Amino acid sequence: MFTSTIGAPISARTPDQPATRYTHITVTPASPHIGAEITDIDLTRELTAQQISEVKDAFVRYQVLFFRDQKISFDDHIRFASLFGTLGRHVGAQTISKPTEHPLVRKFHYDETSQRISGESWHSDQSCAPFPPLGSMLYNHTVPPDGGGDTMFASTYAAYDALSDRMKAYLSGLTATHDGARVFGPGTPKSSHPVIIRHPESGRRGIFVNWDFTSHIN
Image 1 (cartoon, rainbow, N blue to C red):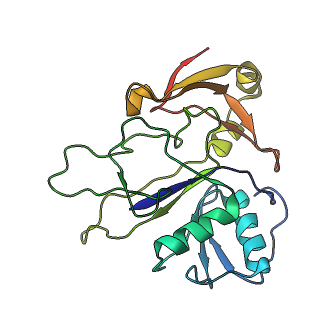
Image 2: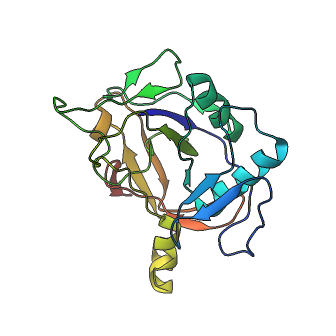
């Protein structure tokens, strides 16, 4: 698996707004709350302005996008990820991911000899950073022939929406400490972030705490 992190927010509609008619890509929702598969697109080629606009719209609307059967190179990976913002380096002092020929792409490799598997619990990538990334782009290069090793996603927008009004009011204004040393060892950043965050473009609110990095509510 190859991964890169993306830094800047983008603008698009949200799931509770009227459905967008996509004319330059095909978007198939994966669930009621999160995820969509994007087809009729080739990530090995330069995308048109219309395709880029619709992909960005779908990203904010569905939060996680899946592009099946894409055979991309490092250059393709970087070109597509860069459409969403400036790419950043991993903030971890110690990480089991390995460098690649491109400094902004990391490699994860696991097999029967692996002593540790990364990302075994719910987390938001590098939430310990002073300015956490907008997202990550993952490319599955080789998967187990019999399945397994699935990457799972959950919508903290939906989790927030499910809270009672009283709990929403209680959490509003609270901050939490995200300590990178819990995962990546000493020398990794520690930062405080709001427990409830608001998307700067869509206005949707979500819960921003996670098992891996959040050490405590301040």
